[in-house]
Image (cartoon, rainbow, N blue to C red; front, top):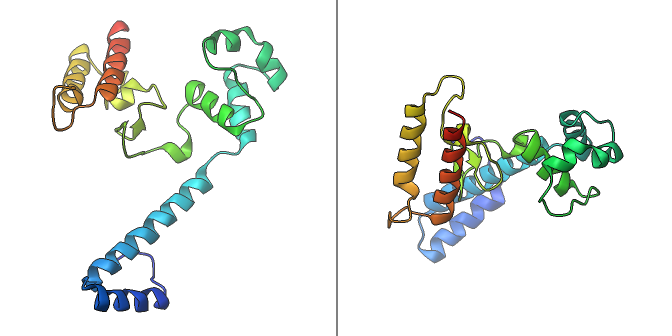
Length: 183
């Protein structure tokens, strides 16, 4: 049974709704457990999120600098961020964007689900082709990459009337081309 406990007032309300709404009380109770569990998961994910100082430190380490002013003048950083929108270093969102692009997946964004998420990776936030394709870059062969790409293509190709999605397919295609270019 679920790990959360329903408040007695919630149980009373479920019984009341079940009587007047002609809805099965077990169904309402399952829904209440679902809402509570989802809420607890979201709370734990927020607790996992990195503080701005930790985000900054990770980006600094990636570019071998010690401060934001050094980062701004770093040639490697300027080259890496060329073409990006103007960065506002006062915002946590900016530091999260830099972390995603240059360091890795934010702890609270691991094992994501929903639109654009494949193998736990939001393909619109992260460019992690090996993880999206479910392959190990050290052991995967060109054939493995092609097979993984074809499996995902079958699902997301725009001609697939049930699960096709042009934006997702284009991201997958870009990731595929980037991996194949390395062989």
